Length: 540
Picture 1 (cartoon, rainbow, N blue to C red):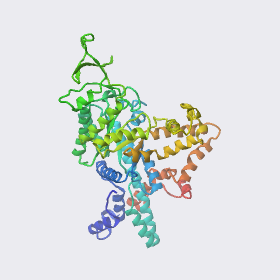
Picture 2: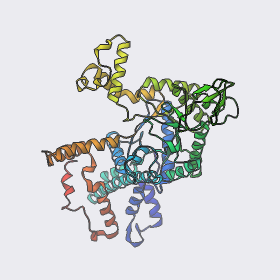
Picture 3: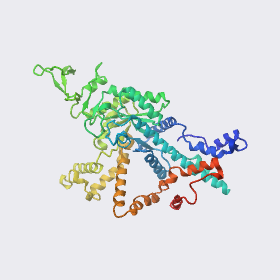
Picture 4: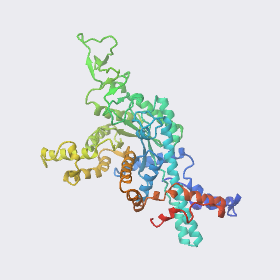
């Protein structure tokens, strides 16, 4: 919980300065108190410091009880983040355990002046910082609007002389919980060398990021985690970039800052360089042992321009593609993932792990984590519940395979492949069981696979596409205005979504309140009787 001074404490401080109860220029002390409480954080660097502590507390709570995992949704605008946090608070009364995931994919795809581009670090570095800044501006504005509403209640109680209502209003002000939550911010592969990583990390932290997620791909050949052609860097190179992030946190006084080390090794079959081994068993030696090689013999000697290295006492030729990249041994990804994770945790460079997988399977993830925890018992993960997976198909196939293994069904009872996607299976036992597993998936990951944080990278991308398609097809079709009312406005009203009063949502009442503070009865306000937003008062 973020600590701040209470209404009574601020009022007492101001009365000590202004015993008359009025500040210079005739300013009411309550107006000063309101503005101080609306401004929940002085700077975004203060946000980073406060939210890092929140994340550390949440991690400790998870260690004590794995059912207390955290969640986030990827947001490509401040408004998306604001509406997510508002929804969580409306449902649960608190936003604790709710984070914002800041996706490099969505910056590349949605916030990129070069156009909609794939997740290959082709977007501007400044766009990354700008979106973090925007998200926290939106969350802080949600605080301002909500606190203004609470002070309106206080003023109304005082105007009516209702002491009980006045006391309740002050209690609500003191008990107010900020909409500001931690951001897990994707810094991709660092956008350059370790110094470039450090410089960008600093700007992201100053924008409010308390947690940075860095991946072990080559910066100039970076691919989306669910695409082919991924190229990893040697472990010591990755650790140096993680250290760069740690130094950025320390320099800016965010000592509790959290670093997520992401390994793409499970799906990455290539490396750009062969590191130099200084001693047996060092990071370079452990990395190189997985290279695909061919023996160098008298019959197959090294040719002009070819590279040879000694592995296990034998001179071998690493398999090299025409683009100069080196291949890893087929099927070595799992072992490389485990070694990646142990290395970054053992070097105290990372706090959380991220293992990018090609399928959402609790057993597969849990088995890898069990191996990691043999070396690092308290290892914890952030897991990408990615829209790149066909969740319906994957889970139904898992159920089918389990039932066949248990003898509950025969192989021919259900199709093996995309036919399982058919809507006819939605109410079939296989569909029902798959949906039950989906509902439990994150709980199972938290309990069985050490996953502290579950996120969905691109939900607002897909939600926007679906919602616009749903509205547009009916609005430009036969339904016209009924399409908007049915798909948007009635649902907003019935779900209690505050954005139905869109003027209020963006601070119209907040502006009116400030005008009153400085102009009193002369204030020209927008929220009078002619404001059509009044039509929605009854909806609440």
